[in-house]
Image (cartoon, rainbow, N blue to C red; front, side):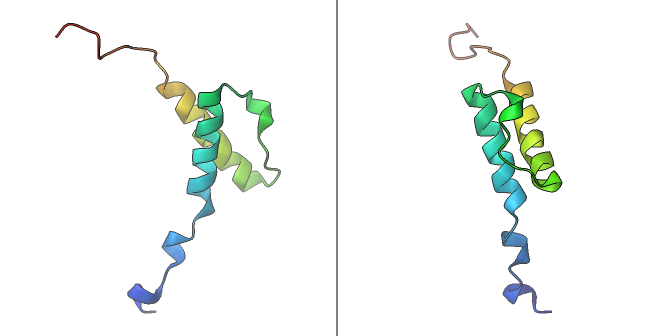
Length: 66
């Protein structure tokens, strides 16, 4: 199959769903607010949700004296 005509790599809904889960975590939505019932999509949403929760440390690096 010709690589330049194969656009399946660009058609991955899981990256969008992961982003939606991360946005929900940043908004402070509860984990049970996942809108997906399909196990694979729910898994991707939860991965994004948990990754965004782990990234919120609350450090204010801009005002720290360096």
